[in-house]
Amino acid sequence: MSESTSMQDKVAIVTGAGRGIGRDIALLLAKYGARVVVNDLGGDEGGRGQDKGPAQEVVEEIQSLGG
Image (cartoon, rainbow, N blue to C red; front, side, top):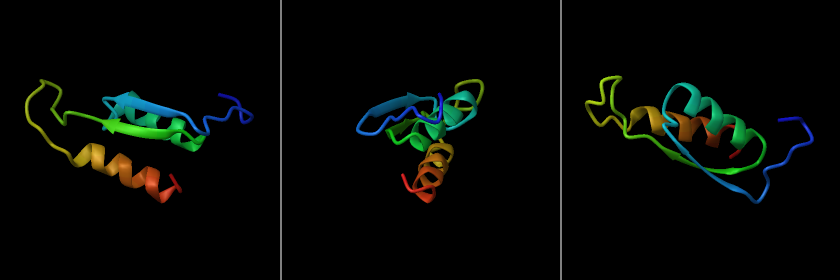
């Protein structure tokens, strides 16, 4: 996205937002003004577990940036 791109008044739902590419996309959308719904099941690479920590960390990072 270019600096002139605005996501103001848009809502983005990002699945897998707790880690990796999903995390980066969620942070980028928030940077450009989107309201971001962070979704992540919290499983490990094998799909096991339910850790809310990674998704919550992304939420807190977005909030610390003013989102």
